[in-house]
Structures are given as C-alpha cells and as structure tokens.
Length: 321
Image (cartoon, rainbow, N blue to C red; front, side, top):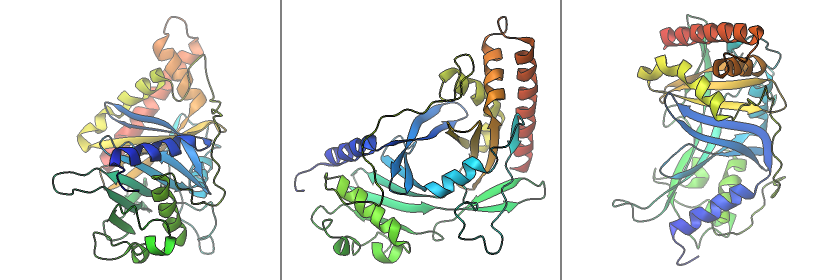
C-alpha cells in the first residue's frame, strides 16, 4: 500500500507472528556470553515459525514440523546427563519418511531496512540446509550448505504486485533470476507470498494456519527451575566458554512434552554439532549449583557428574573443531 513505511510493515508482520498459535517447542539462542533470544515457536500451516536472533533486522525462521519433531524425538529415550548426537542419515527407501534426519533445515524470511546504498525495503529469503557427516573422531557433524547450493532470493518490496501469486513469483531477485525460478519448492513460495501479504494485513491462506491462542507450554520443573529460567541459562552458558575462540553460537530446542533438550553448537557458517541434555538431571544440577546448603546429597552428586560430563563433551567438540 502506498505510503506505508518499512516500520509499519515490520510492525504488521511482528503482530501477525505474535497472533499465531503457540506450540510446545521453545527456542533459546545464545553466544558464549549472552542470551540473545528466548522464544516459543508458532504454528504456521504445517510448519513451525520462530523469530530469529538477528538483532538489527527482523527475521523469522520457518521449519517443517516433521523435521523439528524428528530431532526432538529421535533421542528422547536418553537418560545420560549429556550426549553428543549421532543422527543417522536416511537409509535407502527412507528419504521421504517425515522422521528421517533434517537437522535444523529451515526457510528464512527477513526484512532488510533501507540504508545509504539500498533506498528501499528488501526482503531476504533463503534456505538453510545441513548435511550429516561423521568425522574420524566419530562425532556427528552437520555441514552447512554454501551459498549457491540452496534456494535464495532477495527482492525489493513491491506493494502493488503482491496481490496475485502469479505476479508475485515474477519478482526479480538480486541474483538476476526471478523468485519463481529461484525456488524449487512450491510450498516455500506460497509461504513467502503469505508473509509478504501479512506485511500489509492481507490474508492469504496457508494450509492449516491457525491464528490466535495463548496457551503456554508446561515445562518440566525441578524446585522452581525450568528450561527458560534465567538461572538455568546462566548455569548452562559457562560450560561453552572454552569454545569462545571458535566463534560459536548455541541454539537450544525444548519440547515440553519430553524430558530431553537439544542443543546445536554452530561454528560460524561452517556447520554444527548436536548435544542432548537430560533435563531432570540438568535441572537438579542447576538447583545444586545455586543452593549448595539446601540441596540433597543426591543433587550435589548430580551436579558433580553433570559438570564433568558436559566439560568432557565440550573438550571433545573443541578437539574436533
């Protein structure tokens, strides 16, 4: 719509995302020194949507719900304090199974504010794709696809051409192709069309999209400690300090229906290693850390074992990286 500034468009999109139904999947993004974002994934059609930790521009990530459910459920029988994930690649005949491994693959949609070089609002869209490999140390490692090996299109926001899908997909990308040719997956193109229209409060359906709902996830708790508690995040964070010179960030995924938390350790744009934490033990260790004189002997032993196991895993990751 003429006259709408990028601030208004961003506010509309933020409000729309806020209105979507909450899921039981929760995300935390952090560095070795700061917690960047705590958020609950939203339901968007047959996908999960979460805001990104980008601190300058507004971005969202769109995950296939089957992919997220896979890495949330694959190791939920785990009772070890912490383990390094070793997902297996899909076997022959399993490629289309919804629970074969896609480890954090997602579609990104972001608003790039106008600047001195680019005077108009740009929409940055691209896939993020990880491929599973195993190195000589038998650590499951996920390589991140390099630019050119995934679908992507950055285009100028055009308010008058977004009303018809057939017109929308003819938008030119900065890479000298069109959005239609840049993306192979028709569902992803429909999601992009949906989100661009939501920037001007135009409703373009996405399959099974449910708006509204404020139900909060019920976390596994131990004496007041839970996944999103600041004390727990402050307890976990220092374990990753030895990786600081490797310029890592961490993303934590927790489904309140399960007792294990997934952590992906990302090495800049090179790839990621996965960890899984058994939350009952992690929270008992956290409680003992903050309540040395009140905790039980069992909790204190859990803290000792948990700390040693996490430190061992971090050292193994550091040697690998």
